Length: 369
Image (cartoon, rainbow, N blue to C red; front, side, top):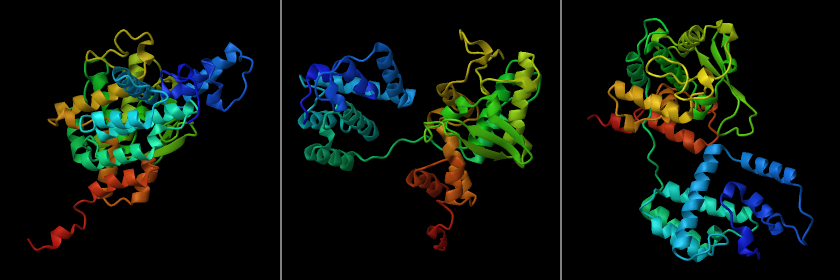
């Protein structure tokens, strides 16, 4: 293991471990040799900025929380978190095996590795002994995650049926209903992640004779913002048509803001309170405030509750997984499902496809029972 002074290597968040080590004078983190002249503070600030941008804000928060958990455990047991020896990591993982989800422990193991490598250290997570312990934990406690239930088209129709559709945008509940209807249908038909729904701007939508074209500027699988487009066709059922729903929401939004629809700009989906007022409570940005990813999850759960579905079983991801499950059950090819949903992992997409095809050509249906 590289010799790095512990005081220089201690960091607060793995996402910026290399920068923290640099500021502490640990030039070994970048493979430097002799001591060199200090860098300008302005340049160091830029280094911090780029290192921070390497991961999404939600990832940085999760990593920071995970690292603090490991650091606190080490302090409680008199162990060094960085550099940590293999025995420490093995004991830490063992302490929480069966208590924490295996997926959570896996992420914390990843954070320990990231922190060590960013500080120029060999990762103790790669030690054969730690890898053996990790294999045993996965074997004994499994790796399955508690995924939210997928929303099928019939389920979505139940949600939409509970949303008010008549009245003026100024009437309480109507503006909120117009937004929720558009959000649910676009999220479902576009197989959008909640972060993608939140990030949509009015200018990201383009009308097309065949439906609606959405430009996804940045997403989980496209962190550098290369961008992609998603086509959403007209639906056969008017009440379930995402194109109609978006148009109705745009009209309602423009009316509320007292502007021409063509002059709309800014976030597509915005907070609306139960009184029909646009803008989040106490929001400094006013009516142009963007609906957050967390709020989108609450929208789905609230509408599920109103439709008689257990809200604890559903979340924003239920729209995306529901698209893949329903499309597969209706005969869509796996490659087409992956392309539309922008899945890069065949294994992840295949899980939804298999769920959708669970009763398609099922051998048990040929038993003559």
